[in-house]
Image (cartoon, rainbow, N blue to C red; front, side, top):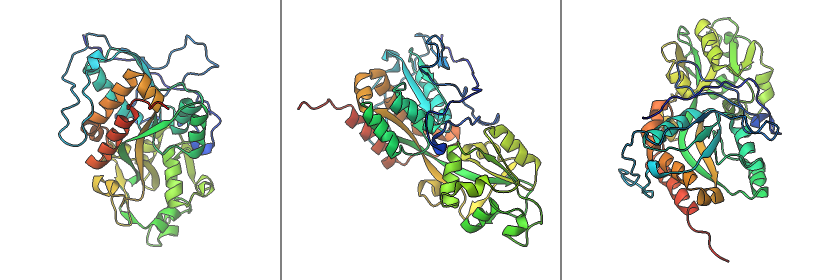
Length: 367
């Protein structure tokens, strides 16, 4: 009998793994109306008793079998055929809270297709995920909403890990306002910067109301905070942190409800969060460009970012279950990603990720 239920745990405290402010773990909790993750949790730690378990789901071996032959790709690079029912062994996936809902969907499909092992799945933020993967070597796969940084690559190398990047999709950060706001539909990049640093709407445009701009924003540990600062404020995060009438929180549910309740409020959200709350929120175009599939894929929309996952070459070679899960992920990602609210890869980009997996699985050449 297929078992689809699993426990839900919510993190109360996240530890910083010696990262810089932009690499601290994100405590973002998805709003209730979004396809949410099962929980945000503490990763394995040497300081924790070994008997403590993370969010874990272990399906029964008799899970309903669906044809999972991966050689039935409609086009593009074909990965080796696998059957999840035959995959043995456990694995750990940790990292970005933005990628988490997508990994959860793929994981659930992996179970439905017969996988009977255990996957420990953590949503701890991109920076904390790289720390767990590179420095502590306690995860097999790390999810990320930004490319790995030089210092993180060095940490991996120092611990004998060679990270392999797989792009799995794209995300857009939407600048959103209350749907009752009738005076703003589009802004220039310069106006956008002013919107998030000025005191009043009329400071941005004298035709707009002489009302305070109420900003309800994610904390500086959120990856979208870093994206916004980089793209709009030239990397000067203090401009945003010191902006008047601004609140900072890790609770996305609170952010959304606050904007819904105030016609003069503004924030920026992952596009999927906006999409699932579009009946009460309105997205602003930037330089006349709306956040949508075409503008995200071609890079025309300003606030875009990649969705990525990383593994290690030796881990891929030595752990068949890790190799099989990545194989399955890349095979079905474009069938699932739009359901979560993200943007699928073009065939060329998807083929590139598949080729990286094929290369990583090649036998190690003897000296």
